Image (cartoon, rainbow, N blue to C red; front, side, top):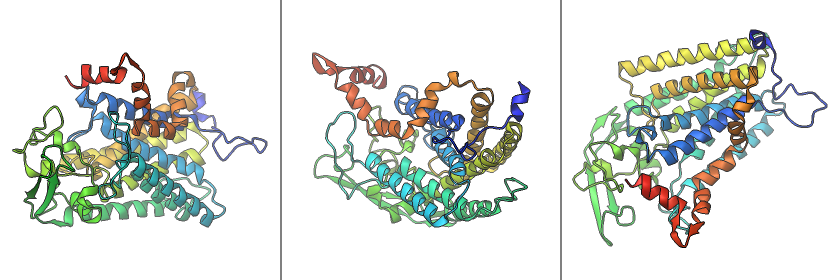
Length: 419
């Protein structure tokens, strides 16, 4: 069995000339399918088992791995797509077009256009549309990594090394990280205020609004109230365009009720919107995609399974060690801010997970064990659209017994979620 580690794997660019269909790397589809499965698990199971839902602020729960895993595999795939670039201008045009398509689709799916499983209406007030979200973040990471691969690659044919062959990629990654850290810790956050009304919260009666004041006047604070990431989003996007139900409302300080309402006695910042896919945190999210790109280089340019695995494992353990050291010295592991330590730990986790899947699927060919995940990976965008728009749930909800409320979705919600 060990001999399989030295067996070359046919990759996306080394296909026979007689073949008309591009071969797919099965482990990529399986990993992508795993991301989709985890997304569905935490979205629908998080209300039943809170420990797998997003961490309220600092810390890592299962749901906090989903976004970095998506970004990681997007980067890996780009190394195969742009293994050879005969026309950089045309490749750039296609990459930008793809990124714009993903961004606009994300705005439609998560901008407030769909109104959830309890309403068949649709439409969104442009004054309150949410501009950023999951697909928008992936599109940002995608275009950064794609431009790095198209314009900054100077690989030597004799040496495929993470650091030596793609040093401009690492220069871009370090530059983005420096910008992120400088803004996160260096920007001064003054006191700020925001207004909540019945249009944005059901706590207030009709034609009533309330102005909240948040005391900050600090620099480098990484709490939910006074971090610079939130300030940048409020200035750049506008507070009305941010996510209305941030995970930090589950903190003990906010004392959120079982029906999702924050009491008036809670700190003022508990009522404020906050976007976990905001502008500043998208910078380190793009670095995650660039790191995934480096894993993809081994897949694209090395033919020996053992050498690929050695590169991936060594790189993953290095990232994990640095990430854990940062957490020990005080850099919090925070998904909402996409902190540097969080980025390194989740990238390392993605690398280790992908290495295990690659060994199982592409080396030992145990595809029968992962065929469902592979199918989900091949149709990941379609499944994402059905799940995020709630169209799949609404379709199931449409079948009921005698009365509309006697449907499977209503039974699950009343029996498990609202306990």
